Length: 354
Image 1 (cartoon, rainbow, N blue to C red):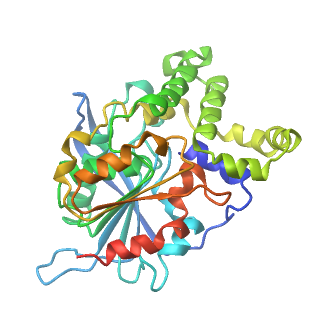
Image 2: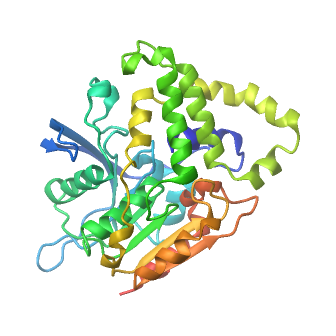
Image 3: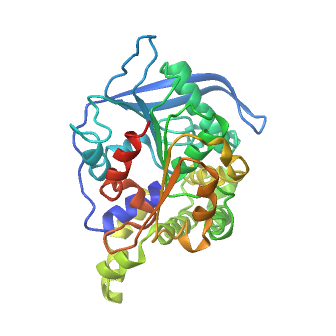
């Protein structure tokens, strides 16, 4: 999540500060008269995207080297240009070497440069869900970029869940799936709890005014952002970086306080958190027959390993491999999904499968 990752990037000093100047291209594709599952429609739905590398066509003219990477809640495609991801994966000989791969990084509905509530419709914006987001991705690929098959879908957090939706609703469109940091079951328990508490905090702020605020409802957003920090943090790392009350509270009063002034838009945040409301690919997992590399981390508050969900569900996909990254002071809690050094060798192995 953006509100989580930007704050933790500040307090966790091992985070790289700058990204390389990767050779990217950006564009927008407009989906006309887009119909949402809710029955709502938008005359024009804008999908922003970033690409690296170039499409290669096989003897039949079909693009055969495309990879789509899907961001998490509150993120954008450009988050995958950060050093901990891009520097590990896009260079010469790396698993997603841009000399041989065509990398597609969408901004999903409600995020980044794509259409979102804060563009002007506010709470009248269609109430999108993950199925809508996946359909918009598919339309961007097929109608906008001419991609009818993917070598890989790699998704983190929300993007991880989108990968499972892709695998169950469009089996075989992607030759491989790499879902990182999620579960393929209904969002319930603690995961739904922190999301609902965050939404309630924003909507309970009188300044929110049913979404018609003239200034951001800072009290509600501060609570939502604080919950996000707790949900995404690695307790071992926090204890290592801030072993005393004084050190942690100095951080809260100083650099972190400045970050609260750059919080996301409140309506956008509500939509981000609510989009997962009916996610549940579990009944259809047997449809996923392509190779799957599913990775979670043991320090993930949002997807706690003690639930045993992954060990149960992975057995239902015939070519799926589940890895649980052990928690250390070097892992990044829920955000471990974006630190490629923890899993890039496994990704290379997945890409080598046929």
